[in-house]
Image (cartoon, rainbow, N blue to C red; front, side, top):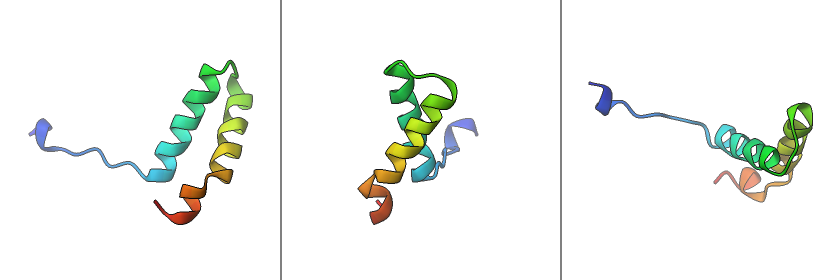
Length: 51
């Protein structure tokens, strides 16, 4: 039955996780990476548009 399961992830959560990965890749760590991801997500036009 395991192949039948589908992973469901909210778009905003996925977008923030990706932003955190980009922040870490750019050299930030810890709270700095979280802050950068939060600010990036807050400015994201797709978040406002709902897509």
